[in-house]
Length: 223
Length: 223
Image (cartoon, rainbow over all chains, first blue to last red; front, side, top):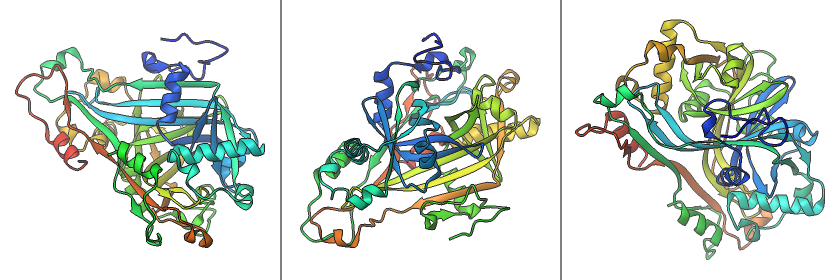
C-alpha cells in the first residue's frame, strides 16, 4: 500500500481512499489499463457544473491524446488549459457473493488528472492522429487514406500529461463474511469480456477489396 | 432534431451540440441506454477540480440510485446535494472508414445531470439496495443473503433525479467523403459486444450447491 505524499504521485487527490489496498501507483500498471481500452470518460467543469463525456484516447509515452471538433465543450475547455480528469474502466467480472452486500465487480480502473493543452506542432499532430487511429484499430493508420490539410484544420487535438494518477484493481475473488460461507447460497464469479463479431463490409465496398490486416488481427484476438 | 429549450428537457446544457442529428431526448431512448449497462461514470467537483469515478447505477422510474462507502469522495458530495453528472456509454462497433478522419465508433450514450440527494427513508433504501443488486445480476436480490442492520448503516445510498438529460447515438454506418469511395481501401464495421464466460465457483463453495437462476440466465443471454 502506498503512503500518501504531498508531492509527486500519488498526490493527496490521486491516493485511493476507499479500499486502499486496491490502489496502485506504478506507471506500468496504469499504462496497461490505459492501453487496454480506447474509450475513456473525461470530466471537466463547464459553467460551474461537472460534465462527463466519453472519448477516444491514445497514450504515447507520458501523454494522453484526444481529438474532437472545435465546437465540442470538452475540447474547448481542454484547449484553454483547464484541468480535466480521465477515467478508464475495464469490467472483468461480476463477483457473486453469498450476501448482497459483498457482491461486487472485478475491475481495473485508471485515473489521471491534469491540465490539458492544445497540440499545435505539426509533427506532434501527426503523432497524435496516428496514435488515436491505431488506439482503436492497431495498424489502421498505415492502411487508411491519410488526413488532408482541411481535415487537419478542422480537428482539435489536445494532450493531457500523465503526471498525477492512480489505478485501482479488484480481482474476481469472493470475499464473504465468515459466517456466510455456511449458507446454502451459490457464490463465484462470472468473467466478462468484449468480443468482436464478423466484420460487416460497407454496402458500397468495391468488389475485390480484401479484409485488411488491422481488422483481421483485431477480430482474431477478440474471437 | 430537437430545438434547444430554456426550461424542461433538453436544457441548454443537455442539448447535443456536436452532430445534433445524433441527439435524442425521449425518455424511452434514454432509459434503454441507462438500463443496458450497470456501470456508469459519475462526474463531480472536489476542491474545485473535476473528478470522474466509475460506479454501479440502477434506475427505478425517474431516479438513478448509487451506493458506496460513506468514506468515498463521490458519495460525500452526492450526500451533500451537490450537482453531479452521470454518463453511460455502450460501444457497439468500430466504424472502419476509408479515411482515418472518418473512422469512428458506433455507440449509444446517455447523459444525466442533476443534484444528488441521500436516500434515508427505510423503504426507499430497500428499493435502492434491491435495484442495485438486480441491475448487475437480475434476480439476485431474492437469492442472496439479505442486508443486515450493520451493513445498512455502513452503506451510503444516494439518488439522482432523471430530469435533465440527453442521449446520443451513432450507428455503425460508414460515412466517407464521396471521392473516397473509389479508393481501394476496405471499409465497414466491426461489431463489439460483451460476453460472459462460464461461471467460476468460489473455491470455498460447499458441495451440492447448484448454479442459481440469476447466473444461469445472465450467462445464457450473453453467450
